[in-house]
Image 1 (tube, rainbow, N blue to C red):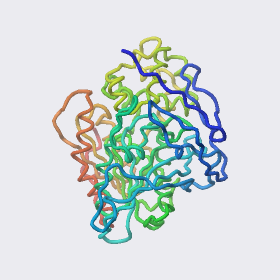
Image 2: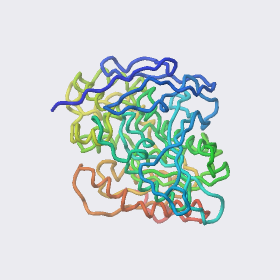
Image 3: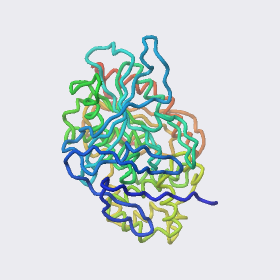
Length: 456
């Protein structure tokens, strides 16, 4: 089967510093963290990813502010799905595109983009208008897959890109409650200086918490530093919200966290890699390899030594794909086809202690989360395996956290075809949002840890 050619990530003068390449043939450019002063100049040379021109807004400046969560730039943004309200304001609200500073897993400053949405609906429950920081589920690794661009263009069938903004449903339901929403694009998704570091717990957790900080400074935003804040995410987003809940006490104690929803979180990447390999979403395995090869020298060395030339071509190709592209291009691919000796990527990493240790450091559940958390997972989920997601709830319970765990019991809807993973997102969404809004309104909750057997 022919594969689409990947685009080169072109540099823009004064916009980034390149630190090296990912193991020769992998050909993924690394970016060092920029300095700490503020420079909001926007370059004009366009980057094109699979037929989609990335707006100049997404090109980071050479220097960033000194404080995490500080805004770099903003601009008004049109929502792709919006209607005029009776009072003249658009429904469900007005959107602002934003770029802000965060810190990556190497401790370096990084520019992250996203969207702030000011709701048209009033907040009628107790307390000030709250904020929900939304971590999107898997969108892809190409810059054109950024959640902010998907809110602007909910369906993209242009060039070589197939992208669907499926998170809009949850976002609009949250806005309808009167809560404000900020959506992070994650590190490297949208911004043109580096690859998206897919499922990297530190990058994701930091980006989500700093999005909450940045939202307070958006011109015209009604949320403030005292606004109760919730975290919401499913799948990749569930891992991001879970990581952020753990990191909040040390990284962002100024974010007043009232509750966290973590749906189908990939808490154990070793187990999740086995679920994704050979599935309809096999391209996501390549995204994780790309991201960790960029960020971790031990994993980068393993990729260079063990991935075949054809496998490296796959890594390059997928690095600019969205979910739809990956489903059509690499659905049900086996990573045994990507390695020199026919072992799976998971087996290769497991055989290399340093590489396995790097992956183990991504484990979520080693820290107690701040505030109450709700973990939900489909019992037949075979993409982000049910057992490892449930184990996250168990680990948090053992640390004394206030955990509401929900096993979503649905029929088996087909092995490895994504339905067992996607359908629970829809069936649990209403309950998940209701639970989170109750926390933001100050309503107490009870943990079901005492009644949940701590053995899977």
